[in-house]
Image (cartoon, rainbow, N blue to C red):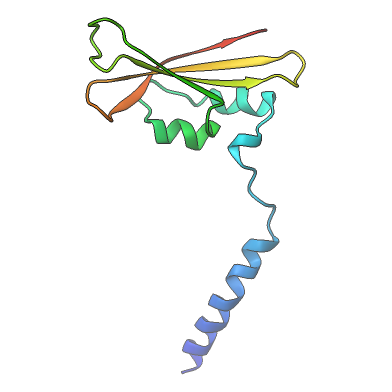
Length: 113
């Protein structure tokens, strides 16, 4: 019975310990330097969810039909922009798909340096 009380006490105490920690910084609020560090973890074959977890939601998206290329769905492009930074930066992530919802990273490119 004493163990049970201890477990309840710890369970009640644990959430308050996590709230005292520094709050999680949402990927959408990344500055250019943080984005550059995180983008170093980009890899070919990453899913859309993986990229969104790493860099957040993109500011722009674009779907291109590649005219019968290896990817029947075309190319999905996500663009991230950091305009207020000095110098400004832009990251474009290109996804390809072999199935309707099976998008994965094919390439990425930084520009505006």
